[in-house]
Image 1 (cartoon, rainbow, N blue to C red):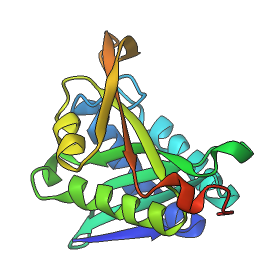
Image 2: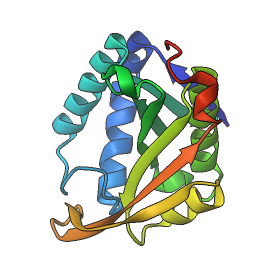
Image 3: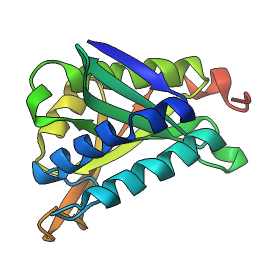
Length: 181
């Protein structure tokens, strides 16, 4: 398995594969911001917007391949405020149903964490659907559970569901706070 950071141009070359992954993830019941059934055209549009965010430096995106098949992705979203440049949000960790249980999610998570630390990020945060399999992944990877917000987002079926907030310190903030990325 390989995890690769994508440039804007590279992301655009795998738009179709990423759209398929997004549709599969939503169809599989993951609450990642979309309602089912997700139209493929909307999935493609989502990834086009991510390509623009990558080009602008607001996000980084990694994909995981097993053989020649794209089976997962994760992104880091960076805040635009000067007092927030030490942190990033881990977003859209997705693993195709065919790739689950093979370490794809764990590899993507570790890759994003390593690259964030190398870029001077000292704090990561995320939210995930309460009770989802992702919660155990984050806990086993050393993330700290902050708490739960009721009815935070809708499931793909449109039902309100709580979310759990997590964070992870990558290294003491005093070491790099104020260091430009």
